[in-house]
Length: 92
Image 1 (tube, one colour):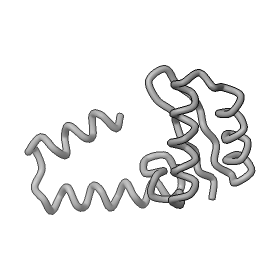
Image 2: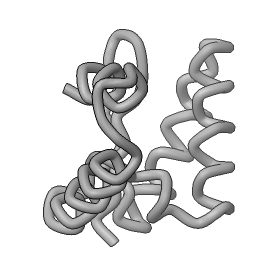
Image 3: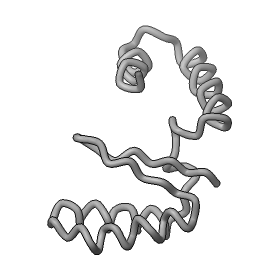
């Protein structure tokens, strides 16, 4: 869905004003669903932990990556590892 939306917003189909309205609407929805813009709600320290965990996973250091996951869960940040990326769910 987000890839589709990004193509529409960047494809020249909408005016700047409508793009702004769409983005504002999505941000309002995101206050309830908390999945469209998760990085905007996570502080810098936690983002760094998420990045470090990704590096550890790519290096196949899964036990260290799991320790970081536990730290994030204690902060109400949940990660779902998908095939191509990690989904971040911030319940703060």
